[in-house]
Image (tube, rainbow, N blue to C red; front, side, top):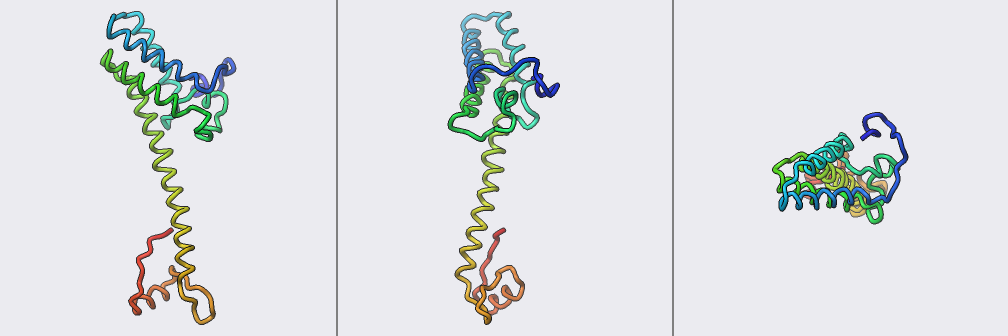
Length: 178
């Protein structure tokens, strides 16, 4: 939280890249404990920790202390070893358990924002990038099949004269490629 609020931390990050999951597992276990034996002191400790987690969340919804403190520029760069989705999944499980145990949705709201961030990053942004690459490849493949013009060059399907001529010859293609 200090990193986001002040731009620096009093200490250095220590521990493993996946240690956020340990906090999540503790929260989940504590929530299940509250179901069986209500404990105001434990619930308050959980509330305080959840407030700190909320302060450590980026404005875009991202939440992972290792990449917030230690390697700021490496978010989502190593899905196999960096454990970002692993930690998020455990924290989502903790959020559900905490909500079911207490009826409080503070951690659930934090993790909904993280879920939105994950969706934005992997579905919306990546899909747009993949679509752009795919469309460029399709456009290039399409260009290979166009008949050459009188000069022996390939026609550009984006030129108005080519579109008009192909319409007249009933070879008009609807091409919505970028």
